[in-house]
Image 1 (cartoon, rainbow, N blue to C red):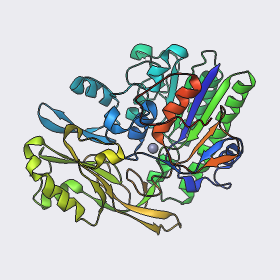
Image 2 (spheres, rainbow, N blue to C red; image 1 turned 90 degrees about the vertical axis):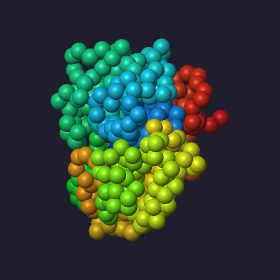
Image 3 (cartoon, rainbow, N blue to C red; image 1 turned 90 degrees about the horizontal axis):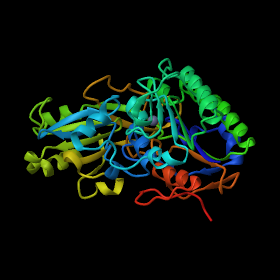
Image 4 (cartoon, helix red, strand yellow; image 1 turned 60 degrees about the vertical axis):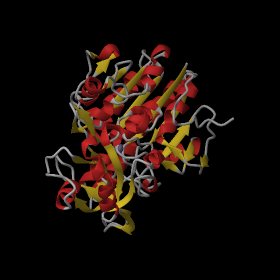
Length: 422
Ligand SMILES: [Zn+2]
């Protein structure tokens, strides 16, 4: 039968795919097609990319605008951490829908279904299947069709580190790749090297070790897929990262800056809200205060920490729409300088309203800068040519149409395009 497997090594920069760090990926490259201009989306953040991968659409269509984002509720701007396990169900109550576009899990429900094994945030995991068409395994709760809780193995002991990645991968191979159920689509999303890239400087031994361990975990998955192929399955294997990383060169509290400039009433006020997305920020303006928008734009564009700042007139260029008062999409300012370990690309980060601020000199992502926008992608099987590479730009939204084409599922209305040629 036709099947597709997507394995994501979260946060691995394309320039860190090397013979020394990722021997498994280098071997895969010999029998896969590599996409050397692959890009993330905006914000280049895991929950957003997960939604773009699952729907084949940009945030303007699926409506998950950021890792943190605002919903207008009872006439107020309310900021949300999208990583929270209940966020998408809450969004359904507020807006009438979870993601506003069907997921791959929904589209393949009638031809074998989907199984998602995710070791990142609950919000990112459930973005693959928020309405319960397939099965999602995550430590915060595993759900099968109809969002009924899974019985038996439930991923509740899986830790968000290299050890947890390995256990999850072993389970993915045993149950999803080689088990009797044979879902048409299997997704395995590892926590590393992203988790360690936020905690340690890029290029430090601890960060490099996380890359090596993710690559070693990938080896056992590819072995399992080879066994399934030997048993006669026609398998498309996609191995990718969702974004890269920049080095944090400064942390800016954008809400505090707006208050100081007299453009926001107070830190807690609902007139203007800055939703941090790592090295980017989404700035929301309540409709009652829309008269202030031009002044806020002029302020943002004059700040040394703000890079590209797109207002309502241009946000379609990065796949965003002015939903729930979104007025500006800001990629924080970046440069090409190297960090202490010789890894180029530094950015300012926006301080999150809740939770820990970013660690100076460690990794972060979310914006449009070069290295956070340089994930990797390799595809093996189907019509993809072994040992070749393509230099035309591709995007996270291209994965769904590529998978659906392999599985023989027709679709329309996606932002991405199938990458099969001929
Ligand atoms: Zn990620």
